[in-house]
Image 1 (tube, rainbow, N blue to C red):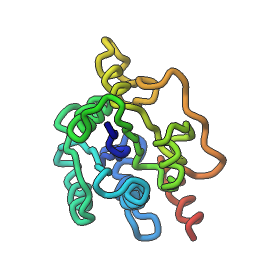
Image 2: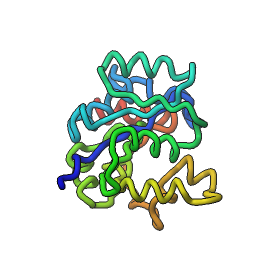
Image 3: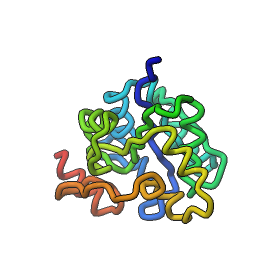
Amino acid sequence: MTLPPPFAIVQARVGSKRLPGKVLLPIRGTPLIEHVWRRTVKAFGKRHTVVAHPDTPENAPLVELLESLGAHRFAWEGPEDDVLSRFYYCAHSYRWHPDSVIVRVTADDWRKSPAMMKRVANGERMAVEVGAEAFTLAMLDEAQRTPDLRSDYREHITYALFPTAPPKPPPGVWSIDSVDDLAAAQSVIA
């Protein structure tokens, strides 16, 4: 039996705690989420890429943008901070085999490389900001079943899935978490 290709889930929300609305902020005229979505589609194809977002009125502008791009969406009705469950239900909506590769793409890492994302999907572990994070559906299932999992592990799911931290990114601005990061990103592109 042949497994389906890797499936990329871009996690996004308008209600970021560090910089609210950052996924919609423009970098050289293009919203941050569009940069990330286009790079992810280049790596895995539109058919194997979905943006998982909370199903809240606050995320309506994000939904409107995603629909204008023709992006596949998964609207999560559960708690916004329960990213693990958002991934679990989204992944199970598209994949069934326990060995299916799921690729976690964070929407605030605007410099992701499609080539690096593919390497991650093939088993290499690297900085999430540069590539992504990949795991199997079985790993996701096991994390979801873990009783009393710390709430921060449900929101920042790396430690729910892996026993160790991912490598650190190289120097530079890889994530947009502040107005200063956004300005630095603008200057890098310029």
